[in-house]
Length: 95
Image (tube, rainbow, N blue to C red):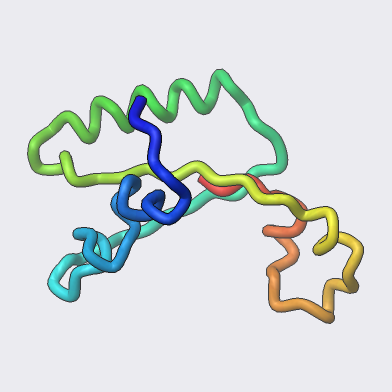
């Protein structure tokens, strides 16, 4: 595993302004699923499916993202005082 500094992290995961995903001529279809807890068995199955799918040369520029973020302060705020959708408050793991 290669270590990178925080400043270079976006480039390392191909999410910077010079990446394929940010080019003007690149068609992107994004789909996400928010969940409230990790299910390791389901995550392994999803990763295996993604690995098989992206092994096809047609789809080898595909990317998968799994993120989770802290919600302690957000959950103390009134629902109507923020722009964050209710489902993302309750399910803060995005796949």
